[in-house]
Image 1 (cartoon, one colour):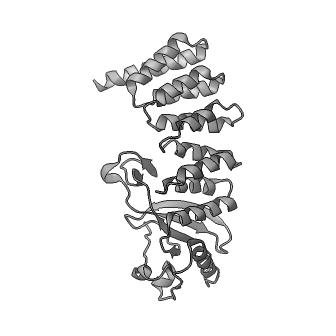
Image 2 (cartoon, helix red, strand yellow; image 1 turned 60 degrees about the horizontal axis):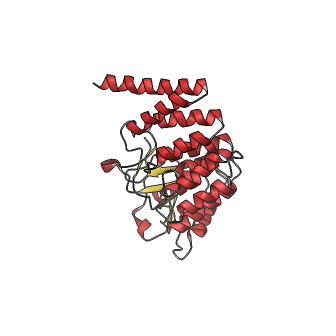
Image 3 (cartoon, helix red, strand yellow; image 1 turned 120 degrees about the horizontal axis):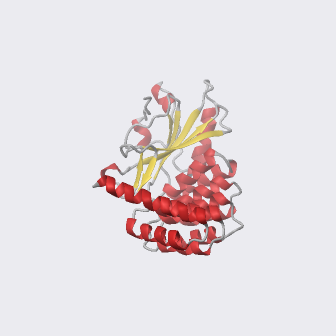
Length: 297
């Protein structure tokens, strides 16, 4: 694994390139500038390099509690919840640029509790800024990359910030973004924040919304783990006409950690649902639950 090596003088100077540090290169001063200006200065440094390779622009941000980044055994990527010793304490936002510093080709959220793997590429490190400045940098990324994997990862990075404005920003993305996967990603992460159940239920009900957004809202309600999540999903199930969306609710409820309430819901569907295929899906889910219980005895 190729590791990231950062100069110790970063506590004094706000910007450094790992490649320059390793070869005795010049560091850049300018502590009075805001994060956007610092990032722009870093990109100018990158453009002036004699070597034409991709490079990372990176900065640390305040990670909210209950997040693990590649630290839970058997889980690749980001996990949330009560994670105990596996919880990540420090995280960085890494933007991968083309050599001309004009195009972002990748965005990663990496743990700084250990040396991040940057693939041997140079890293331009921006001193940690306030979280609102960090979120503004991500807004800029989303404006220049309104769709695709970079945009979706930028939404995840927004959601992971420990900042009070995050729910509002995610709601804005859901409301204003044109790319459906980006909106669905924002919906998914809203479900992990408190107080979003009504908004999510409204998205599920809205027949004007794309199927991916409505499905993401169903999953988000279930993952929110609020006391009323299963009653909310059952209420939505009764009110909906969309067969595939109702099937998605059945599948989602079947995975619920509240086994008793989930089983009761599935039994009610199996007993009263007029659509035979949905009844059969509920029965299959009940049988799978019973089989798993017997297997644990």
